[in-house]
Length: 618
Ligand code: F6R
Image 1 (tube, rainbow, N blue to C red):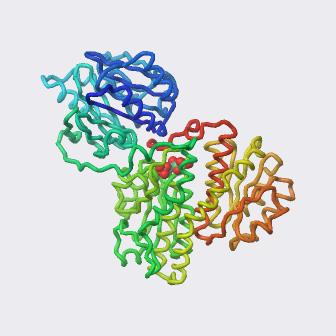
Image 2 (cartoon, rainbow, N blue to C red; image 1 turned 30 degrees about the vertical axis):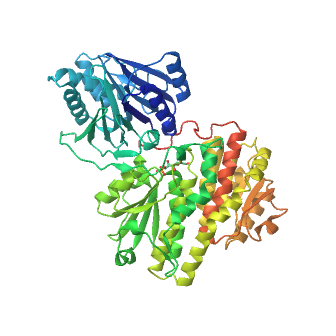
Image 3 (cartoon, helix red, strand yellow; image 1 turned 90 degrees about the vertical axis):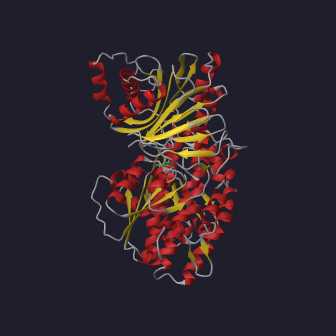
């Protein structure tokens, strides 16, 4: 949700900022801009559209200089146009600011500024108000040390702000200097040699440095070429550890793949392996998850579990509910993170809460985590981004180790989440009544997964061929039962996100309770019907659709293909798989289906309209 990059060093800032923005484009891509200080003035280039449009603008009208800030936007306040693109000037035109977040009280602040004669607003954004406020306070402050004066003005302005922000700003009169601050939106300081960086995410700067300092809420950082100082909003200096970024610039390249999404779909054999690596114990037939920070007795005493997240992570949570209840017999509740905070979910003292989030920055999930911790519940994270706010604020958790996920549609993070939830179910089950034989079966099922995923990936061309036959459908329905009901939801979500077609997921048996009225020749039904304990029940529902002349695509396994022949229009056959592990396999054809259909329809797969990968606003 908006990406920020700042640079101060000895190189030409523009190419570094533009390259960083390209890496952050997944966070938002409706407009972009750079502000670079050239001598005694700030040059701003900005426009609606993608980074490519901004790069063209900069090449036509270069912005030279050795330090500056930049932004790629996902609009929250004000429509998408050149004026609303960041950076924004203060009233003097000396300060240029970029912002990720929402200033909730911007209207009140704007009215106060206007009353004080500061009327020169050019955009409808909350960000411009913050730029003006900082400039207004800066002009009122005295002092010869203009750097300290600017940092103090930033602090004073932010104390008046209600809302969230990750910001970076420069001042035309203060050479080789930028200021950053965060509350609720991520901001990382990249520490280089004779150059330093600010960014919303390390992927923007990893080509230049792998030394990073993850800023905390209410940190303000003053950045120069060869030094930086981090302090609190109250001006108290702080020390933060320098972390090594785990991945390299190579890891975030598309390689030979046309899209990140396809690359990430094909990375799943490895990401699934990495999610379980070192976490299975064969002797005891259980899982080993040291990051939970819980003793065996504490694990045994968990009486209730709440799983929370948004979007795809929520679908993983829904599979988790089936898994944990089946393997460990612990009552498990799934809560939309956005609802959890605002309703009164009944919780017992021995409830364990898991916040599931690939990015670890999703505002709704972070809000749920904070609410749960505020009430004193042990709250654990299942995150991919190791240094994320959710990972840092939780009482422990399990990392996905899926590597950077750039495609806006989540794919490999989902299968990693499923593996981790299976490990959690296995661990908790083995603390209770799950036998060694049952535990061993789960381990065998998990270990078979990477190779089975490789088998399913070989179906990509076949799925592409099927998709061509269905390219002019008006939408698609997805059905599944039990472990695969959430996969129907996930298949529909992938379809909606990247093809923009109408799609819905339902438990198969719900068909006859209303949805069947939708069945018609241009609305195919996709049944996720592996050869499992509910296969014959799925067949009943398939018959119901067939009787009403609805086209049917079935994903099945084992003897399923034989039984469905003649009954359905298309069969996608996947390897036979243990029921609880099956979602991590059945979802792969659905990811490929959505991908190939989106390509066929000419959609922008990695940057679907209106979306952003990391949703850091409520
Ligand atoms: C779907 C998708 C979103 C995310 C959701 C949560 O493809 O990407 O629905 O799953 O925004 O994001 P994280 O997992 O980063 O909290």
